[in-house]
Image (cartoon, rainbow, N blue to C red; front, top):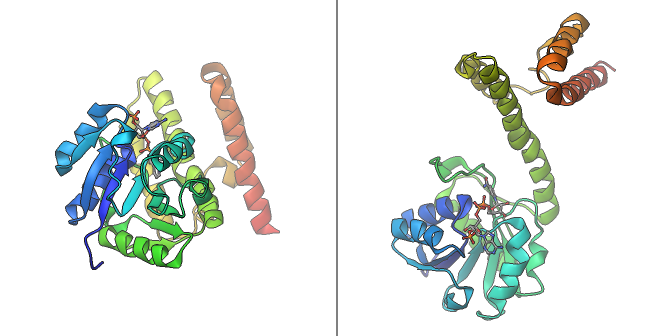
Length: 266
Ligand SMILES: NC(=O)c1ccc[n+]([C@@H]2O[C@H](COP(=O)([O-])OP(=O)(O)OC[C@H]3O[C@@H](n4cnc5c(N)ncnc54)[C@H](OP(=O)(O)O)[C@@H]3O)[C@@H](O)[C@H]2O)c1
């Protein structure tokens, strides 16, 4: 990038916080950070030495790129408010996996996506190096610009259109959000029964480690895979007595594993 890109970050939550820190670390100029709650904006601004603002009217019109890292439900409203304060020609992107880039189209001529395909929590440090950054824009020159920007923070940058990104997001919900929820169920069962959740952690780690080298369906084990109906009945009896709220998910997962096995055998 020849000239130093000036960036305004709108949103200082999980994504805004980490993305802002990383963009600053590689030498990009974050001019301002916006959050309605000024303490959130200040928390990040203090780290990266930029201006914290809580009123969208105070957003500078001098930046080259505006990154909206706000909840999906707020993207359009924030874009609409922003468009009252900066020229329509500015490049505005959002960081969502599920929301199409075109929600920005009514408000800006140049719009796009800068979606880091990873799970972010403020309390947890992230290593951007291998985080896939999915970029897109309505103009080729901005797709290239966003790709170059992505490559400054990650070695794993992809041009991904709205349809592809929405599909990736569905798959991501399964592999991350749902698997994390399954870990939460394991935690609930062990902690309620005064058993250490830690004893399951090597198993959890190996589950993920295995599928980095093999296809997940080939690595499936357990009573559903083996067709071990006796064990399945024992588990269901235990759940009925102790955790009836988990019966439905147990049965659904068991059915799904079974149907995958039948498909693979047919
Ligand atoms: N978290 C992840 O793992 C992850 C990963 C990839 C992509 N994403 C995407 O990145 C975006 C941000 O997610 P996040 O997890 O960073 O969200 P978050 O932690 O909830 O932070 C959202 C930020 O937007 C502000 N905000 C909330 N509601 C707003 C509204 N109605 N108007 C203006 N500002 C508002 C919040 O602070 P105030 O309340 O102070 O305004 C905060 O600064 C979402 O589109 C999400 O899908 C998330």
